Image 1 (cartoon, rainbow, N blue to C red):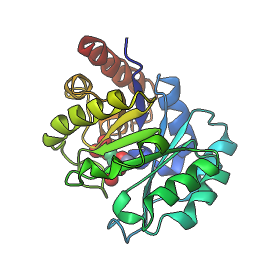
Image 2 (cartoon, helix red, strand yellow):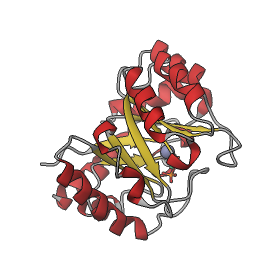
Image 3 (cartoon, rainbow, N blue to C red):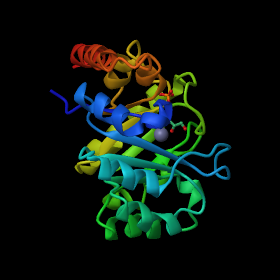
Image 4 (cartoon, rainbow, N blue to C red):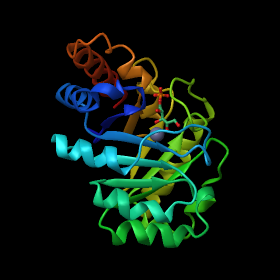
Length: 229
Ligand code: DX5
Ligand code: ZN
């Protein structure tokens, strides 16, 4: 049985009730909180920063927090997120002047480190740094917004990354982000992903205030994942 993890993207949560929303998706069986950081520079949208990450920890969230940095520059903000309780910090290689240095910085702060690949970003960025990587995040949409459609070429790319990870012999999570829903999660798992970000696919159906909605969506995702084994 693959070690599958469901990572709700809080970008689509109700921000006015963020702590409660996180409690509810985690109680429903989700594993990781996916935390999208946008700076209105690297991507054309603006979201949340380290203060919100710290607030979630203070609220009592103990699950891993997976900080997806869509910011440029990257390095200045890494320590702030580490201090705020981030578990994973991933960044886009195009957004860092010195990729190896940024990875070292994240690891030096005691966090797990990862690279994020946009749909058109080549995997060659992995060539010399795989020994410093704990997570590879493949974007199946262009970053910046929730609610976009899954780009099918990400399936082939997942297979290529799965081969790279297996050949490395390292324990590296393979995460997919963008347009992941109950109806395609099985196909995405079969292509090689083990960690599944879902924003609108999870939260948009549960925002009538009924936390039990999340139970059924997470259960449906788990059942599709079980079939993909
Ligand atoms: C997009 C973000 C995603 C986004 C996913 O830039 O990185 O995490 O919230 O949202 P959905 O699941 O709605 O595509
Ligand atoms: Zn994301």
